Amino acid sequence: MSKQDKLTPEQEKELIMLSAEIEAEAIKMKMDYDKNPSEESGSVVYIHQESSLLENEDEKLSTVGLASSSKLLAKELKKQKKKSGKRQVRTSQNWEGRILVHILSAKYPVTASHLSAEIGMAQPIAFKILKSLQELGCVEISDEEQKLGPKRVYYAPTINCLYYACFMEYSGKTGKTTDERIRKTPTFQKFDIIYDRWIKHPVFSESVSELVVPEQGIAHKEVRDALKEYCKLIIKCQEVYEEVRNDLGMYWRNLIGSAIVAQREPDYYKNTIKQIYKYIIPVKTEIDSFASKTEEVTSEYRNEK
Image (cartoon, rainbow, N blue to C red):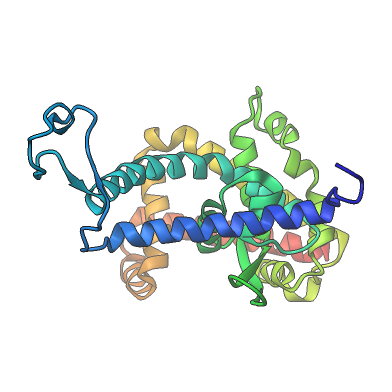
């Protein structure tokens, strides 16, 4: 092959993306046929290698020795669907972490076809994982375009994507202490770089604005450091909870449960606490203690400003 016949890296990448899109369309067609198989028997028939028709030339064609192409195809598709389903569940679990890291490391929003070409995974699986991450609040749609072929949907990360990636990587690390495991987490170590890269993007900056006190801004180094420390705190809280959740005493169960009830039924919780506060010692003690500590801490933090 001459130099002129060789593809450039850009052309090779585009070719991979096109082939991934063609593969996705083929899979969609297969799935559609699986759901809506043809009712026509077809003109092509298959004879099993052990059929008696091959041994006896006088035997007439019958349903014993014949099977319609549509029936055989439907049977094969059903078999492939079972295999494909198991394969996709297993693959989704394996690919999710890599997709998170790839999205955060990218310079621009990504599409399912980009992930398929750059990571080397089936486009339908990439799209399925992106939709799942969107439901978790880790990514949001940044842009959409449709020129030639299927519509392309671009996804950008949120601050939750950064937190989720850190926690997933942390879960796979070993160490004597939580701090040691966090230090081994690659995404957490790159937190500053990732944050500075994406904070200028509307999707990421908007998600950060929902966490940060308005007057503090979101581009300051102090805010970034606070968000990084908040990520570390979340990891530690999750780790401690996993350690003790099966051995929680009644006090902690009531405390956690009351917080959930207060969130789910705010009016009920408020009215009930108001009614029993004067009479029930545990309730009065807990609320007074919490209010006192909150006032003390709030006063201390305000003085630091």
